[in-house]
Length: 245
Image (tube, rainbow, N blue to C red; front, side, top):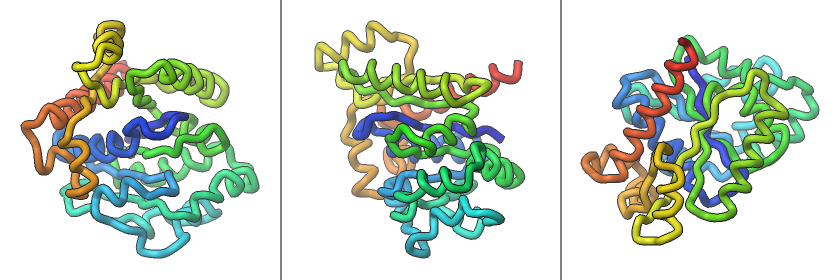
């Protein structure tokens, strides 16, 4: 089992869309039993799959003592892919984690799910607090979406420092150029500067995920966006294999 965190300290970078589509790639392309775990109180990952929490203010309870996370897991309708949805109770998660004082609570919960899932994809909130620290301690690989922008370098530096401060051993980071529009000079320059980074393009098919409430690969499998997510997933799987060798 491997935990893949899609994390950024900056909002609006395509984090939730990337997490939702990577989970589909894991389940469909790699045929792995996959859990998409939404840790963002906005609940975007569940929305993109047409799912809502069954109970109000229940997501936080997963982190309580002796809690069973499987009680809240929902099937997505896609083979091998389940969702652990978020709700507004996660707004209080940082203070709960501070109260219980378990620095690896999230990692321990992920371990309990190892018998059911081969890949756990975390859709993380854009925060710098105990939640992000727990995510980085649990992650085997951290995916950092970076739109071509001067602010992205600062965001990437913050993530790097956060990992150094909270995770030992440090999980590898895989930066991703997200929302790339090759018609723009700044975007082309960013691509030229980082030719080896995976790319998720700025594409109407990705915007349609929210209206169709489905991953791109399910309704536009031949699109550049679907190919971008598939290539990113391949890069992640290669990264995970390299950790074992």
